Structure formats: C-alpha cells, structure tokens
Image (cartoon, rainbow, N blue to C red; front, top):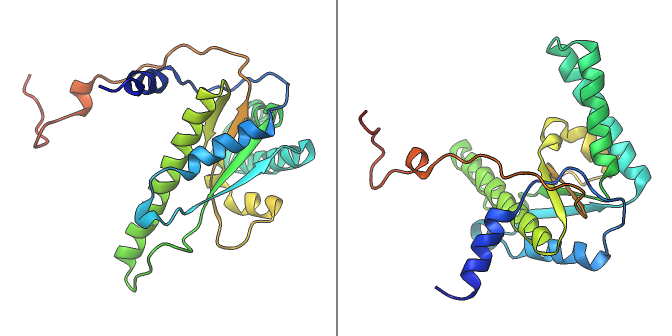
Length: 211
C-alpha cells in the first residue's frame, strides 16, 4: 500500500457535512482549488458535463435563497404542512444559504453527451451525466476538507430548477443539480452512522442471507 493511500482513506472517513461557517471570507485560490478538483473527476465519455456558478455576492445569495424558499413554501403548503412549521423551515433555509461565505451551483449539461433517437438510451445517457456530476461534487467535498474548509451538498435546486435558472440567468442547456455551501467550519459534527458492509454487500450474486 502506497504512502498516500492511508491519507486518502483517512480523509474519506474524516470528512463531514458542515452547515455552520465562520463569517470570514474564503480565499479565491481555495475556491479555485476546489473547482479544479471537481474538473478531475471521471465522467462518461470524458464529456465533463459539469458546469459551476460561484456565488459570493451577498445580494445574489439572498435573492436566490429567498426565491428558493418561496418555491419550497408553495410545496409545503400543498403538502398540508402547518404554517408555523413552514415558516421555521423556510427561514432556516434562507439562513443556511445566506450565511455561507460561498455558494457553488453545480449544473449539468447534455451538450457533449451522446445523442440517441430512442427514449431508453436518451434516459440512460442523462443518468450517466448525473452520475458524472455527482463524482465531481464528491471531489469538491474532499478537496474542501483537505484545504481545511467545510462544505455541504444540498439538492434543493432539483425541486425548483426554473427559479434557480431565472435568478442566476442560466442558459437553457444548464440543468441545476445541487448547491454546495463552502466556508471555514464553525462546528465539528460527530461521525454519522453507517450501515455495516454485511448489509450492503454481496459477493458474486445477490442472495439474502438466511437467518
């Protein structure tokens, strides 16, 4: 086992989702390092279907957070959630995104992916692009951890893509996938529980264990 392997494995286990940040700004070179790590993720056909919008302007962060909260409020209301609970959830969401020093919107584009005449293969190709973008996000989270930054992966844009596209003036081919919050951590979360390998792994065939 190479000398780097233990360090990589340690980082994988030590990384945490950070939701509370110090107010100090993140140096631009740190943000660039995180984005460059994303660029080196594997992708289907090496199409690199990821695109990123870095948001550091407080006014833009607030507009995005407020418009997303409005969309969520509508969904929660349709679900019959009590008004007080809706208020608590949406206000917490706005605080979460406006208090992070940096937001990175991660988008997907099918521009350089393969094109097929049938729906089955088009659907598979889109899933391949989603998987590629997810790999880039994981690289971002690990790079942030290595730099002493905290980060958290939020999928909220999936529930209001048109809102996100309008606020951030995205071109038509970009599909919002996730918001990554970045900053210097102001919390130390405990390790989250993980299912044992015996529950999620089978060898050669998937057969439920007896007993």
